[in-house]
Picture (cartoon, one colour):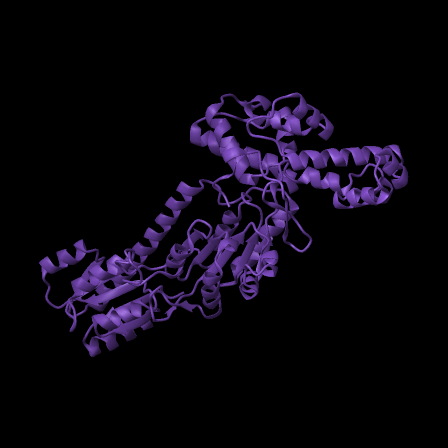
Length: 518
């Protein structure tokens, strides 16, 4: 994309001559004869660089410079003056001008200063991006994986990156790394040198979210003392990542749909359309298809967002990645905390593989950060892991867990009543069915219940006869229990249509290990 330069000068001959020269050099140019015209241009599109005359018919160039810097601090401004006043030039530099040139314009000098200014702006952007990446999520710009499902995701990332503006909807439970995938798309696309802006739609109330996305004009509401650019403008020519988009209100959904359709919008309190060129990537841990049916998410927006749908499977569905990720995070925190964990013991590996990871990669990452920080040694052992006792408890049968719950005081964190009772029912039905060779009439007699009631229970728990599924294979309920979090986290398991099936029981494990990664 060509850099956009705004040329502000009241002399028509200078505007014509410089505009032609700059366009011949490969720049896109907008021109303005006054401060008022210049602000009108800036209100509709943000230039990469401004050539600003010091003397304008309606306002002083220094006043415009101060206003520009107040609205867009990163903008590169080069002052043009016919007076050669050192005092004025120093004042301009104090106000944030990148440089200044004297009239009559020396074209060679001007082109050199413009090139240098644009490079400086690009370097500042890259530095800001690197700082943000380091502070937010060090060394996790790629999620190491050996699972076929994630390899398919990476192939889709590669294909999407080749397109310029295709929208992407990333679905998956919390903590699976949706933000990392969004960043990968941006970094491997032609937009990688431009801004990557992100916002969590669930973190702000409707009014603040609208202002953050679309910006606002001075006086738009009580505390709007200055004009503010929204993330859509700041992400111009780059990528905007909308995390937890399922939490966005219907009012803002309408405005976002217009942006996707027309690539323009109005600031809050504004009357002029602002044009942008931005790729929008969104993510959610909700079932948006179900939200559409429930009329809490717009159907037209849903289909505009999911031109390319991507599903990030939970960690429990790709066990081959658990040890790969564990070693990756061990190495990461070894460097950060100057520790020396080299290997994972067999017992420890077994515990990591048997745990359900309701918080997904985020929970694994945060747990290993804590372990490496607090423990010492060369080998990661079972006693180092806070989940060891929980895994051992989960391996007990439902009946044994019920006996333990009745024999002792109920723990402070409580127990998941619904899940425990349903697990007991499943275990008893399966045990009685096997004893009666899966004859439902005899099983119902053994359990002293009507056959219809037994069939209903087998249906809701998805218990299948071993004759139907083949010997030695787990029934669907057993497979679901193996895949689902023991506590039934608020996430979901993947349906065949790419959506999620929610669980009714509440989470009870993982603690604060589930914060910090989308």
